[in-house]
Amino acid sequence: MRRSKLTVLGCGDAFASGGRFCTSFLLESEGTSLLMDCGVSALIRLRQLQLDINDLSVIAISHFHGDHFGGLPFLFLAMKFDLQREAPLQVVGPPGIRDKVYQLQEAMYPDTSFVIDELDVEFVEFGAEWTKIGPFDIQAFPVSHAPSSNPHGMRLRWQEKILAFSGDTEWDDRLVDIAKDAELMICECNWYDKPGPGHLDYLTLSQKAHLFETKRLVLTHLGREMQHREIGLEQLEDGQVIDLW
Image (cartoon, rainbow, N blue to C red; front, side):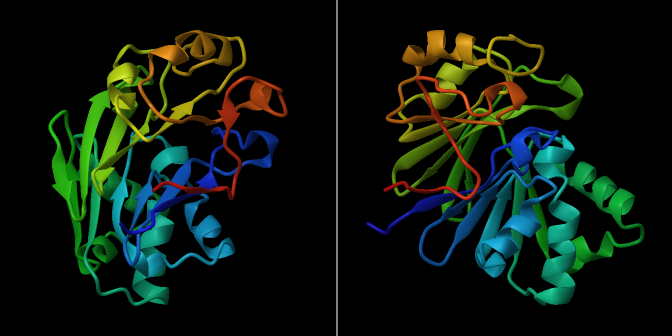
């Protein structure tokens, strides 16, 4: 079986608490890769860590907040004008993903949405049924965050293994379904002891974690209250590399 790994490009909150970068994770498996969320700092982190942007075949977006998909315009422009990318690219996300990305591109760099067309970007909307995206299968469930951002948690399957990601959410029983049978569950934990709205806190999560049928649970989207705390669950760090299988 091919070696697969996950690089934490960023695991911070929207306010860069503790100097952490915005949410983005890179999954790699011999010659192909998937970017899970693309916060505004994603391109910077890919460059800093000298990761091959041209290996990206899929970008999966959990919801429409800037610290989770705001890096797409920068990435598209770099692919077009700096890297002269020719390989097709698939962007998968909640319903409305295509229109949201075009609107974002025009808002950030007016009159550049033609770049998306010339890069041959294919947009795919995910849902509760497994959807085949390149070498990956993706399944998604709505979660409890700002409704207008169309928030979802995701399950990614490849090489007969599952990686789960909560997206941004307060406690939601659907997290149990998202984590089921996962090798790794990446779960947001913005606060220490302040439940909601829209985000999880450590005290709630520590009481519910036993419900997750996952081999490993790690915490992301770490806000100011979660910085440098000694807790009983594993916290991610920017730049961390996890060997998956």
